Length: 371
Length: 75
Image (cartoon, rainbow over all chains, first blue to last red; front, side, top):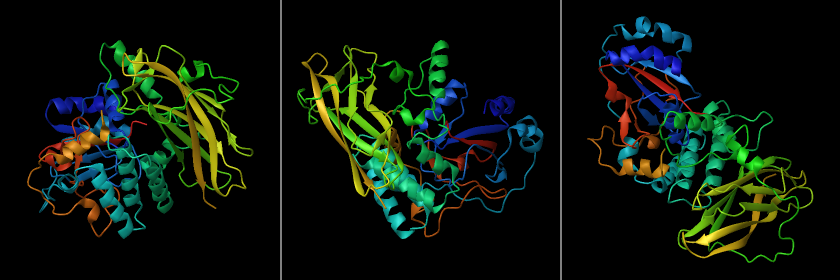
């Protein structure tokens, strides 16, 4: 992309060409951060639903002044000669040009409404993988919004997986499934670049674009170094269950298994999410040990670790969502469901200057197994 | 999308838009959406939300000038 940026800049300044980025990320603000890092000021349009119905990325496409595609999949080597091959070329005016299609914007007012319409579309076109992908992406978008429902993430995964079953050749869809899935034999560095980007943007004296949703552990090739540095307990921290329980008054807990419908013997990525309760104005207490999650898997169930830590934020108290992720390999004899008991221990305060306490939250992760 | 990703889009969706060019939402067509981009075809004119502010923008709004569209994912 920097190659194209450098090659096109003179033509942009001369008013001979415009450049637009369209990003296929589920979270387009990550692409905005990427462009900020690379100091590229192109306008960015978000296609998290893959409305363009594309197989893969990246694609560099040349569109003439009448809106007609003249080149698709331009290689990076074409950047050097783009002036002669495209920008200064003359193209015939077509007899007609299609009108702007604002269908999405004139109809939908919320992700909930979009999910309703997309669901109908999936029912009407059961072999349309693109419809499944749109529905999955809308569920995940609602999951990341204030209208979120606890099952939205799992629903997103289910529909993304169905999309890929219908058409396994769609690279964008495959990556979306892998983004949240079990750690691969060769882990993919989805968002490891973010650490470098933030460091370099700060070194330039700029403020990095804030992300609405921080990438989780499954989205990094190299796990968060703060996790490696955290003191994960070797022994069960509350074996007799003596710590007072929090049933969600202070911290709400949700879990999602990816894939949502695994078969016996599969490895599943479990995402456990901890959210301070806004009603009780709960805050993490960051001046003490971080959240610890202890897992007690039943016999025959293999987990990537028994104990996990979700690091504290840098401020004295905070209200961010925290996540813990781990892989679970299901027994070949599993049938119906696998349950993983466990619990989290954390320090939490009522409001910023309120009472602080130590609490235990019992967590049972249930994974439906499909034979 | 930035803070409250979906909200930004939803806010944009809720904003008044110009005279609609198509009466039906794109996902409610009887036929699947076109697959991919083909040389010689019009670039799809559907509006997409700006990642900056959620405002709907169509590639068709750039007509009159040559355009390079860089389609990518940050991963």
